[in-house]
Image (cartoon, rainbow, N blue to C red; front, top):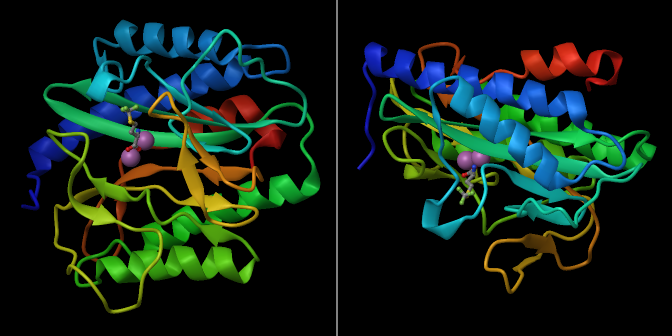
Length: 261
Ligand code: MF3
Ligand code: CO
Ligand code: CO
């Protein structure tokens, strides 16, 4: 069942996404060599609570934290830890959900830690650009396959690979709603997009091969070849002509300044 949202519902969802965007901005301020991913988690928890919202990931199917912090070869769902200390040259995907007024927002940003090798910067740039290529397709009358195709073709033509097992999703009163939103696909295939559909688009793109495995903690998702992966995510409303992006990287951009890619 795909739930189409009313304009009122969308404004409630937007509020969640703005709080989330500000939270990513607060996290951006402290990302540096020597900082643990657990420190990032604490900042995010406080920020979400300060805005009268709830961390949607905390306790979700037993997930133990506010943020998913995924460093280098961790693709997604890394668990924040005092033992994971960011170091110069790492990349870290920070992904979270915010629950307020009965709705969820969902967004993620992959940050560089200090100076990052040019090939890894290019992986991040390509993944982020692919997210926007996917968003461009999120308009009434297009199909889910158009989104997947746009992301996949952009990344594969740059020599990268697309994770298959993890996908984007509908978002609303539940964190994960129908439909699945794969980051691969064929043009003109799949569910037709309708006005008021709200979806999270989240390319997970690998520098090497696309194969992943889940660690014994039941969450941490890594590339089999241990090459890095990048992950960016926005929550988007399907509209006529142009998608409406409810989440925003503007707060991250303000913090990163010239380092914003
Ligand atoms: N934010 C993730 C997503 O993009 C979900 C995180 S799983 C959780 O779908 F357990 F951490 F919530
Ligand atoms: Co997410
Ligand atoms: Co998501």
